[in-house]
Length: 111
Length: 127
Image 1: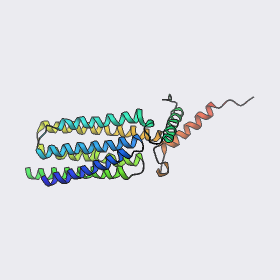
Image 2 (image 1 turned 180 degrees about the vertical axis):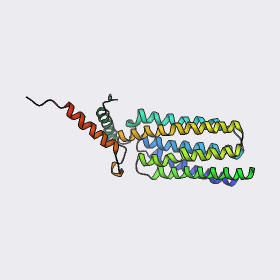
Image 3 (image 1 turned 60 degrees about the vertical axis):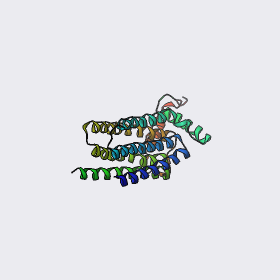
Image 4 (image 1 turned 120 degrees about the vertical axis):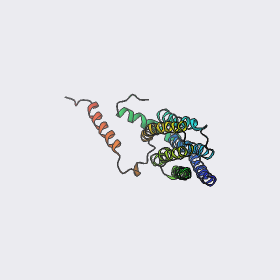
């Protein structure tokens, strides 16, 4: 089980590092939120593997909290912050105009 | 019997961790938001379920398994909704590489709606 722990932990660690690189690079807030979800999955996996290794269920409620946290985070960013988070200001303005146009085409109120 | 369960649990944990690794590589290397979401959803559903099964097989108590089922249900109910919102937002803010799309049904519908609205809004021809 110790070998399994180390192999799985190193895979999760590498995955978390790669996702962290994507969070830093962006370029948009949606890329970041998707990468944060991967980071969160790695965290859930790590806590689960720790619980399995020690045969200790104390940390399991944390998994439930993390699963909900990822959902709330992505929905909040996708709904309210998507057009504000681009690194390139021109692209940001273009995205805002585009969002407004598509909203108008669908007959919704402009945000 | 317990040894068999532990081995199965270890295999599940390793597979779950491997899916996380695949997602990390995919999120870093894929070109746009939609394809990154495709990579990111693997550990969110299948990877998480494998890890939870692995933990459940190791712990084997009713209380812990109930918590694990709760986590699995939360994740299965919320992951599609979150993915839908992120994908929709990506399309609206033009974070989608349209040259990589084979079919763009939403674009066709939007163009159709724009044509219809445009025809309706146009000023009536001078009599």
